Amino acid sequence: MTTTKNDIAHRTTHRTANDTTTRPILVLGSTGKTGSRVAAQLRQRGHEVRGASRKGPVTFDWTDENTWEQVLDGAGAAYLVDSQLPDAAESMRSFSRLAVACGVERLVLLSARDWVVPEGEEKLPCERAVRESGARWTILKPSWFFQNFDEDPFIRAQVQGGEVVMSAGDGVEPFIDAEDIAAVAVAALTEEGHGGQAYELSGPRLLSLDSVVDEITRATGRPVTYRPLPPEEFAAYAGGHGVPQEFVGLLNLLYGWIAEGRFATLADGVQRVLGREPRDFRDYVRTAAASGVWGGGGGVERR
Image 1 (tube, helix red, strand yellow):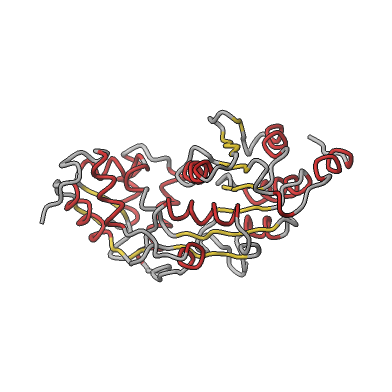
Image 2: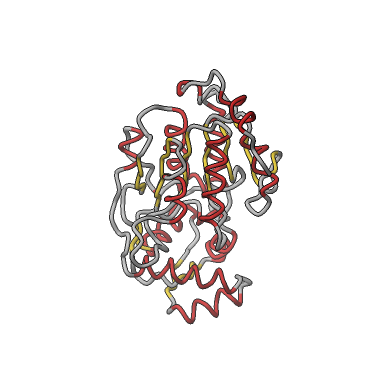
């Protein structure tokens, strides 16, 4: 895959910084929890969206560089979700540089609050790749998504079965709505003033897993409990439910950080960007319960 100087010159002729949102906006991972919502909110605002994923109408695969240039051609901005593979940072660096070469002017990266940072490193490798790309970049660093409880198959099945099992102890987390993450991403992709910003994003309150299941119980009318397990027992439990071993290790790592309260603080990124409070978990639970995804009373709360 090559990009010539003539190609780049042709794509960038007569473009200015003000026309990024009149061109298509690329959304990677457009079938995922945040990407699907970014695409939907952009379309609601009247923007042309190029949704790309391995299984979407526009094919994009981090492991196949032949799919990269076709999704970038003509785009003015891009929402990026990394590959989650060991070479994710290397791929992000190559893709980000190609994006700039193709005339993409804004890059918005979904990252995380600084987890999996090797000792001594200031920033996550994928973040550094985007920061050093030459584009106007924005980094989003959210906490755990509300939607893990109804859209992640492993956790959703636990809720449906009446018992959420994690190795998170009695820790708390400022869970956030993926809709709020998407709204911040849309602002960064289409509005001025977000270049060079890294926004930490959280919900409006800290929640323990006991509080989470209590909210779900009230909303569904079905009892749901939380069972904390030591990491080794959780590994056996998850493995017995078909979770791949490498993913079990990641879950134990992430749940362990909840247990130790590593990120048990509220962030103000949603308020700074959107000028409002983030959505509360209770509102999310009522909506999810009413959809019937967990079974039960379909949104009838028990008092």
